[in-house]
Picture (cartoon, rainbow, N blue to C red):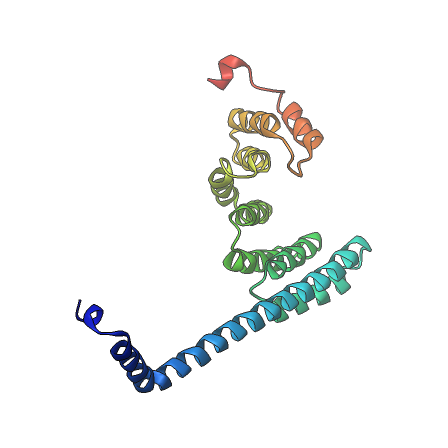
Length: 218
């Protein structure tokens, strides 16, 4: 290459000339680089601070729920959703609001809260749980077909036992008793580490005549 044929002096002259001609660009690049690094560090610190604050608020929410103070819980939940709408804590707060509303038999409000949570959740596993809760509300509102659809959509996901129970409940409402028995039996077989009331599902299955026989299961 031509550059390789230059002696050390000529190479030095070319380097100095290039530096003079590009000094502003080099300085600008350094400044931008430092600004990006500083901005990134500031953003990380801000994000960590936001997460910590949201966690603290959610702890207050959990304490209000544990103390059976639904009004206090709702107030804290609203603060979380307003101040940290993009966080998982906001989704969890909406679930708590839905639970309080359902406890008051305010199914319309419960459905609204769950729809909001469904629209903001990012975690796939949590989305499945929200779908199952929406299914529960639909079932309570008399929409057994809608509940069944959500249960079947979640059946092979992260909560097979909960999905199986919801599916069984929906099928009972629809008068499809044999299928309901199979659904309850499948829920009991799938139960693992899930938050699942096994005794209640067993009772539902027993009320329908117990587990399906091998002949009826085919």
